[in-house]
Length: 238
Image (tube, rainbow, N blue to C red; front, side, top):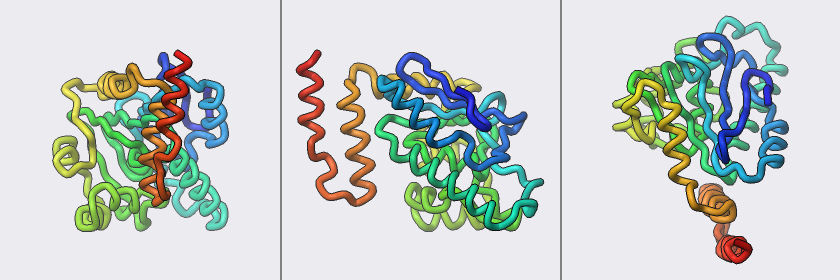
């Protein structure tokens, strides 16, 4: 499925979403895939246990096209950003495993996309940063709050205010990425990583575990209610 600035296809029971827009995979439109089309595709492929997001070529995404800053009316820009924020909230709350395979530059909106995933696997030469401060703006797709939840107040403030670009090993040490690959390209190791997580598990198990963690993060009372019963029922059908 092709949508906006990306392409979505299945590799066995793993969905692969590829950002594809020039050498830097710029997010010239913040909503890089139509949210409803993504959800429709997942509904049509109920066996999907994981989603891997990757950038085509050398880079994950350098974020917004800064040459277009100031060329869009404020109301239209707010609408575009809200659509992107809703898309990333949707990815964040999917009941499946999600991971970003990060090669090269992962800046601004690109890192905001990666932060909506549960896991981030980086190549040795990856660089990551919320660099919007350098262009006179701030992250607009929910990246600031996600970075805070991941790293804590002090690290998040410093990284955002300084527009720091963090290399892969430093990102690993601070908890920004899950692991750094030994290979130059992060995609294959990311696929292996998520495949290992979901291998041998039923969809009821995957959905129940991920949904419980998502609900707990949102403060839902008794977030795992009914999950054991659903998994047991599915196991009984096998």
